[in-house]
Length: 153
Image (cartoon, rainbow, N blue to C red; front, side, top):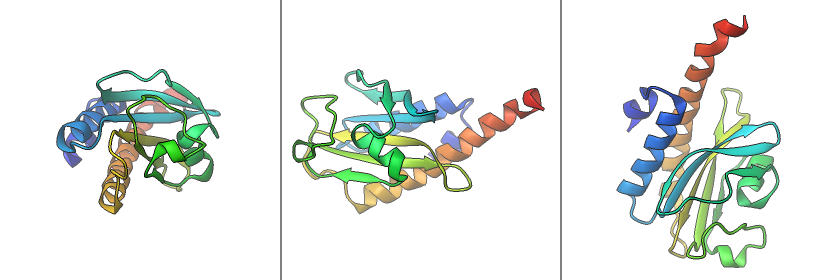
């Protein structure tokens, strides 16, 4: 997965590949998406799941995705029905994990958001793996930006 994400032809292709692999390889992942930060809004770049989400744009601070953006930290919720900040995408979702994508300076630039229909589906191994994947997506994002840098010089 490492080389596939880093060598993808574009950031969006890398994000799509990451989402597809998460769902294909980890049976407890029912939906996976990558949001990137544009101003004060998280914008869904790519996703994989049985259904599309209506939340293609999320205001920073809204829901668990917005919380992860404001606090620049991972958010893991065992049972979303017990979390008042949860904004429902799918009625079947029971747990969620959101992991920041950060730039070289550690600043929040986006996130990986994953849902599961199982209560307590996400553990330390999921967190570690998603943090590793977020780092790879960050590297791919930098390469995308660097490709456009000469146009802005």
